[in-house]
Image (cartoon, rainbow over all chains, first blue to last red; front, side, top):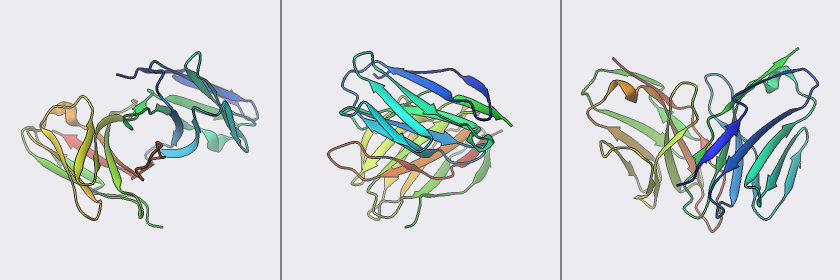
Length: 111
Length: 114
């Protein structure tokens, strides 16, 4: 089955800095890569996603890049704010439509 | 647009008991997936339902079972509860199609086994 690794497990930054979270996957047939943000005690919320026919996607301060050859994709958050503090999960889906999630990255943005 | 709703929000059971968790999918969605999320971990896929049939299953034993109803709502049943079943159970709905579609999560049911 699919194997997804997410790094780092914890990321601490100062407000205004950039944050980058990386996920690697094993199945070259995977074609859909969403990112979720989960605040403490709340549901995971989709923040951005990318499909395998696109290399980069941007939405305001958030961007995702995909390297299909190397089988990794990354979440980039610029100009971080304290409200960006949360746990971020990557997920990978392929032809089976069954998602595999990473273990999560706890992002802490210090004011 | 009505989002994904789950009930109950919290539940306490003892070992050996059985539990049923419920999920109403987001309006317009026809696929429901269930996940188990242990503290500090990512969601682990349990199974997915589409057109009232199981459409994929993760690495969970048969005592985890489910149903999907004609209105696309769903139930997760767990028999013979074990201490390790204590977790947040998340339901997510999506619209099945040719391409993978975003999943939208409910707030979850926090299950505690004593």
